[in-house]
Length: 255
Ligand code: SF4
Image (spheres, helix red, strand yellow):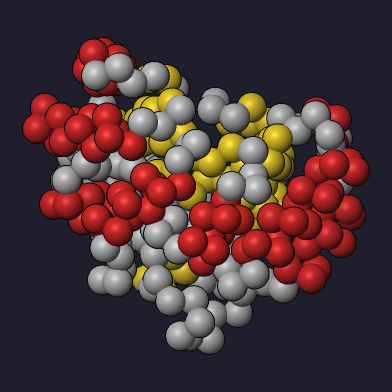
């Protein structure tokens, strides 16, 4: 059976999505809905391959959704607010690329305070914009930041995340260091490319030991990826990676 990647989200609000990592989460998508725009083209992306690979949201006619409409969309979206664990920037791209990301964070925070005070505000980010001080300032207004880091060496990073040419791996790491107070999210996979070899895992642990995330969340493929030749790693291998992380004094969480 051929497994399909997911269609792009069609609005700024979606879900709620039941997530193994963050419970019941109302999704906020700040990316255009007609084509996939991202600073990464991850081999495992469950929205398929990136159509427009860019770091510069202002350089192209990208048709980002209008943040002025976000409160209305949140207020009219039918969902049982008191059941939500998180309201999370995620969706089919990188939310921090939106030119008005800071404004969107304020809208989501105001909505959460009114409609779902028990829920935490959060983001699943690919970390590529964390080197920008204004983006870091907005990120720090959220309560939880899940920052992607799938590799600790540049070669593996480029194979797995296939970034825009404008993405500088060292600047990304420096941006995370400057950000502080985040959790990392890492998917380990095998197949055409792999970030699960001993060598790649050692490099990744080395970088995390310097960044000191609040927790390092690790998991493997569960949804159909863009590259259909990828494979999940075994649960035993995930546990071995977690043990290596713990030996380096990292707080590891397997999902
Ligand atoms: S960063 Fe996220 S949306 Fe962008 S290609 Fe990777 S998995 Fe897909």
